[in-house]
Figure 1 (cartoon, rainbow, N blue to C red):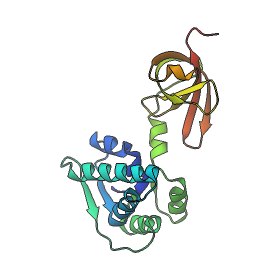
Figure 2 (cartoon, rainbow, N blue to C red):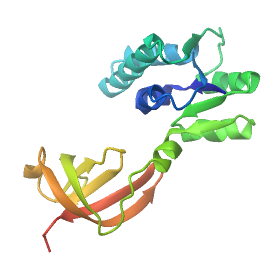
Figure 3 (cartoon, rainbow, N blue to C red):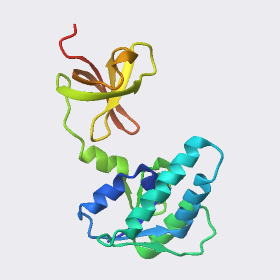
Length: 196
């Protein structure tokens, strides 16, 4: 099996941990245009974009240097936009594109190229949490509304908790009160255990 990693997969970083488990057994390639796109991002003035580019480059570098992984940089010389180059290479090599980019997934599917969705993999491996489940949650930030704080489960599920900013940095036992499906998987709402 051949896997082609796109920019979003490298920025996300979970693919590195997944491949390190030895589960894939695939030949994995990072196209030169993907590395170039990450380098361009890492050099821009916008801090958020720059951080994503650097994170993606660091992930690619670690993966390429890991002798236990069968990962290679592939020089294509392709001057097309990155998504076009990935789809073309996927079609030529009979490979699958590993991505977290919904637009790329749709484009590849329309072109007859298969993709592995990072969100689909995460969903398949998601910790089973149901309404009424009691969990421990590290509170890491403010919610979008007043009286909300947020955290994430180890599997990446986003949790919004009824609470005050003073809870940030604490580990809280809470009860899941609602779960909704989002574009990126699921999100849960919770309340502190023992509170109304």
